[in-house]
Length: 103
Image (cartoon, rainbow, N blue to C red):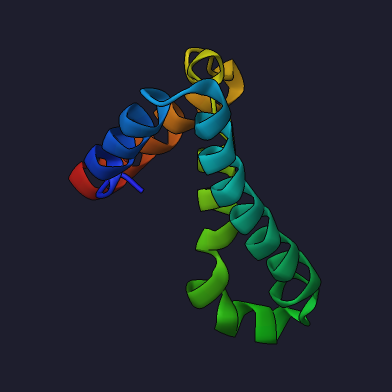
């Protein structure tokens, strides 16, 4: 998602410059697509046995992440808040990764 950040933010700026009705129509169209993909992931790869899930996870594992990121950034108000738990986990995993490769 970080690679597409400039494109995504440009899309959000363009769509938020439209009228409220058209803005929500565009966002909801994408949100329904994301929710459909998430539903397909929950009904499909998530229900696989462990070995088959591990084999397919590289191909489908991004779906819940992208859906969460898009839905969390749906409105400017939602974008202005963050969960402290995810913030702390992110700091810890970054520090652990750096220590693992540099110590």
